Image (cartoon, rainbow, N blue to C red; front, side):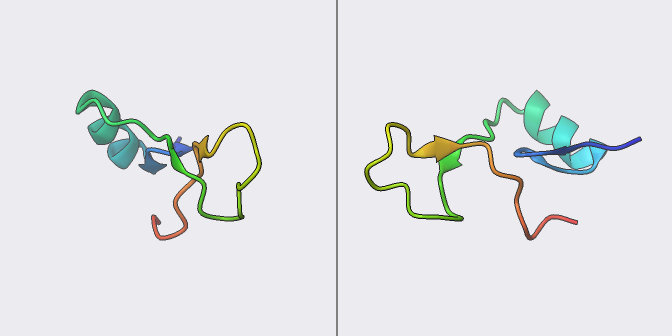
Length: 49
């Protein structure tokens, strides 16, 4: 069983970042959020595998 989240892909990456106090919230990168009420999201990183 694994994890796919804004903190990383895979249980080890997820747990390491969660236990270190990291947040998965970042400025939106996949589309322009200009004009939206919120510019932060928990997007799953594309470069994690």
